[in-house]
Length: 420
Image 1 (cartoon, rainbow, N blue to C red):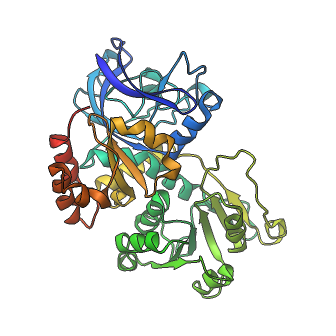
Image 2 (image 1 turned 90 degrees about the vertical axis):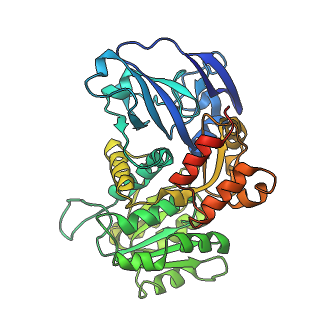
């Protein structure tokens, strides 16, 4: 079967290629990809090329398909897996398969599987590691957001605290405690707010900061103070751009006290120092944002590590249980991952979008892999719709949904957008 896929051939050398997939073996599965969400990790892959730790170099002679936040349908299940999976079944994937201690993963390391493609062959190791997941949510785009959402879920589970005199770690944020989310109205920050409000283990107060009024206003309109209050949480949004003493201002919103849990979503040295200064006794700082600079460092108060039991955690992705939790919460509509999506595009838009991802405003860029569409902001649908009936219809659908992507919008696009 022929597939069309975006492959990396070297540093910032991404090409939309067409090639033949081999016949599947008994331990493999042929699958159709419907949607993929572009991750900053793919941008870092493009920047690093052969130097990336997950790549099987050299890419010049062994190009791999990029994209790891994808879902779709199983087309042909190999004999070995016929009792567990069936043709036509919807799927999502946990790309961090950790097979035999390697870092190899779909979207980074394989010639025949990655999210930015029309058809793929799922290799045996994905199934052997129980990383091919049944998917029951109402729209494909939710499956493409399950992996980034699982990174958020994993970060919350990685938090820990201790009781005086005990060395046992109580995993998770402090239930009913105080949570500060810094630089947290980007795509992952939005997901973190949503999860904190709807997860089984909830804080009592959340303070969300950023330095952009427009981003804060969008976040507050989509994840509202009222919704948090319904779940027993006080939610506060704060712009810290012009605040002389942000530590005092943020602590004042917590009754003058420091915080039990602090998450940081941007690798910026002054923000690391701010996060450190906001930690209360036994406070846990989660450094969520992965820097591109391997020498990135920032001061940390080790006096407070010693005397105030401050501690630091960081995770890079979620595990399979985290992605299952994400899928279950999406299927039950406890999470609204659509708040993370700001742009839609087709497979043709992937190379330029991936290379320039750090320069494109907005949040998640969602790709429909069988479609030929320019990357377009949802906010620009109405303007583009003046000359294009497809976008006029999508503008009408999204306007009825508070400017958000939806199952209805997805179904319309899949039925009417041009094929790649």
